[in-house]
Image (cartoon, rainbow, N blue to C red):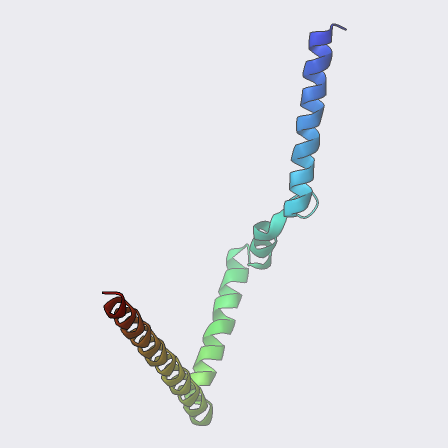
Length: 111
C-alpha cells in the first residue's frame, strides 16, 4: 500500500475514533438513541394510546376543577407565587435604581 493510501486510511480511522468519542460524550450512541429520542419514546405512539392519555389528562383536570377545596388551594398557591414574583421584581427595580443613583453620584464627584 502506498504512503498516500496509508495516510488517508489513518486519517479516516482517526476521524471515526473522534466521532465515536463525541457520540459517547453526548450520550447519543446507537444503544440509547440520545436524550430526545428517549423522551419521544415515553409519548404514546398509536391513536388508542393518545386517546387514553388525553382521556386521563381530561379526567384529572375535571377532578381538579370540580373539587372546590383543591381548586381553592391551587388558586391560593398561584396567587402566592405571583405575589412573590412581583415582590422580587420590585426589589430588583429598587436595586437597579440605587445602582443608577450611585453611578450618577460618582460621576458628579469626578466632574
